[in-house]
Length: 561
Image (cartoon, rainbow, N blue to C red; front, side, top):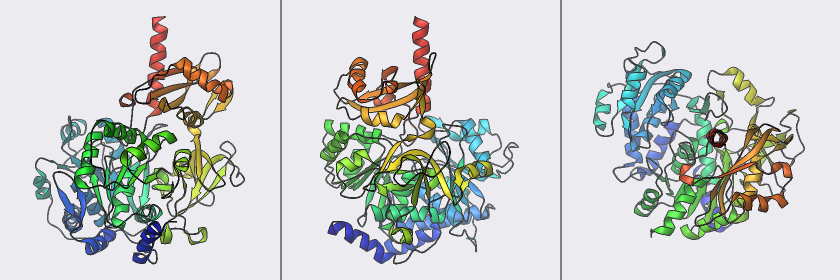
């Protein structure tokens, strides 16, 4: 370990000699005492320092209590990455309530579903965003939601609207009140985050104050954050990547976030330059788009020291190009999921590009926030047979299971689903397939639910995606299982070509055939541009929609024939 990495970690250890369980609002109060006028949220329009966020959160929390919000009640928060969103989150926690992080891409029907599912007592919604007017959509879908007079949502007592064009109206609508004598406890739920719902209806995962704070400290310690790290991203704060890795981890070192409202490569690079960001966050589709943008226009990225790009395989040549274009020494990729709060596996500072491109890294070293018996790591892993559930030998490939202080409480009001999530001994089944290499780094082979059979044999899409993206002409690849009249199911692929490259389906099959068994070869291959890929709010590619698109392609071809 280099001296600078060791020194950065030691600085965090000196400030946190033992792990102190606390709530998130207490965490903000301590950070405000330590960092005061340092910026915490930076945008072109507004900058909030630590002291201001703390004061705003106190004012809002008092208003929430005056509205009758009590400890443990749920407050829905449907807000874009505005500076006030940070104050609202901490206000909800200070009132003792639970923040329900709502995806702003949801349709009105989906919004009603998650509000009901979480049993929200209060909903705070922005008035509009882009072309949408959420206040009008909610009025139409749920008449009476503002006053608690919408019968299908009996737990909803009040709704508040935040208008970015008239922000003071929101604060004026809050009644004066006193802060509660008793807020939340460290192991109380702090956030309910909804899963993507690609395999069914979204479920609300309960993460505690301690879950989030340990994740925050572990992320900063493992990656050896420098004092005052500035993270720039367009990842939404209603997901763990933006909330934990961006906001909460940065606060460990008195850092700041530069949150953008939507993904725009030019805007992100301009914000990096203007606000001297040091840490660029995104998923690979975002990172690649920013890299290509940086080749077309000159930006001063000299402040940038690290790039964290996670959630999908990325070939080594792309990582090398990112490192060259952005001029960064530290490149990170990682693994985690909502059910285990945030990142639990991550590459280390100084890892070679081969480690970053081939693996998700090692179990996070968390210092005092980790498990002493495991050398301060944040959790432990084992693998099981995905069909029988039996334990497999250490290092064997199988379904990954994990346990430790990052384990969430499970799914809100879903005891049966929660019971399926946990194994005896408080192990969580991740649903992901992989194995730990002898060097301690995790190699993912796919999702157990994404496996498909081709000619009667199981196929892992991840294996093929990692292989295909090693070809210099291919930037991204997505394999999916599709119905087949003869075999029942077979593989198909969507391919994104690298910039300036040309490649045909026939050439791809000819290149792939000598490297894999015949049953793994895709029956159909379609080419698609990156900006045409269906993505979630965090930029993850939605394979369920890709499958629908593939079915439409096949139906159109059949009709034409």
